[in-house]
Image (cartoon, rainbow, N blue to C red; front, side, top):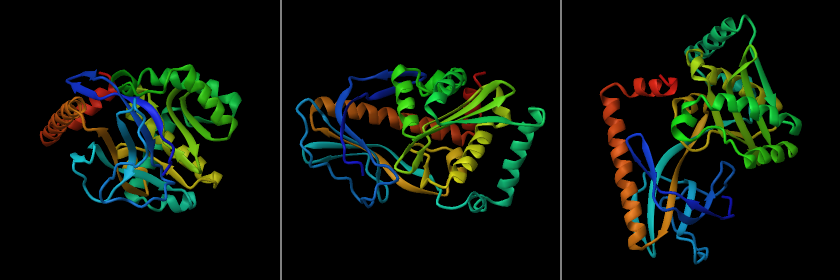
Length: 313
């Protein structure tokens, strides 16, 4: 695990309907375990023994590898241990050829992927245009074009999770490009960018950081088409260990992955009445959100609602 702690203000998010409210932010010592982490999975998360700065309320470990299902809330010594998210972290083993990777798909899935690529090829007049960006002089163009797509996506409109529109992000892209530690991809329809994929690289691991597509092209599966082209390119470089789909679950990640590790985001927060109230409110809202999602799925309308949200219609 990366043993470096970063002091961050972490908001406790409370979602009510289509509104997100931020409770007072907590100063926490934060770190994330990556796929290159060699520490074994733990049966029970244990609070770090590191000294806690006076202004900090505790620790947050993202993507801690765990064994089995963890209790959402418990006390551990002087800390409240809160586990709001438990999930498989999907990845692709890139220490193989692209041909070997393709063989992991069933013949039906390979046929489906080929059909999607063929459909978009026909829509583009017989030839698909896409581009890789990796050099310092190229990143400004990628950012400009990708931002035109990001503004249209449901991730940005509803989740505030589009490609960051900030000077700091642009500077970070340039620094990574100078170190040959980034690959960014754009898919076009004629001269119009319709999908982007942005992947920083750390210790031989390609990180799935941002993917977005223009909802006008949803029926052409442009995100899937770009993902396929990007993976073929990355495999051909023959220098990467993993493609890491990072935190969060989706059918897209599950489709392309060759494996997964069970992970959890774990808070260790000072055991005070104020922090207890914040975490219990968050826990209640999370439970309500999960209940609503499960109910919609049982009624058979969750997938339709997702498609409606993504299309923006």
